[in-house]
Image (cartoon, rainbow, N blue to C red; front, side, top):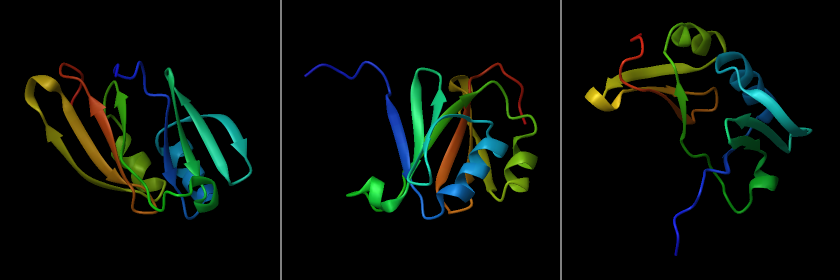
Length: 122
């Protein structure tokens, strides 16, 4: 079996999709690509897509997963995340690989921001 060619989509099972939509657009700046009311809210991120799905749309999945978004830097991220109802859990320096900032969205899902080495630190 060949390895997948690209990440096509990642989705989060959302209890309150409209609230999470507000979080992901204001805290992370995700651009809306498609929306089916609050059943499925999809964003384009590079060549991939990420989405928020209500429980009925996500079945058989019952809970979320971790999404990792590559960013140029972490400047202003903590303030935007807090203002949108999220919590920054911390930043881990991974040396030559880069750094990861972990956060919780308003529903408690873990999300990470990845910054390659050589870009500005928080």
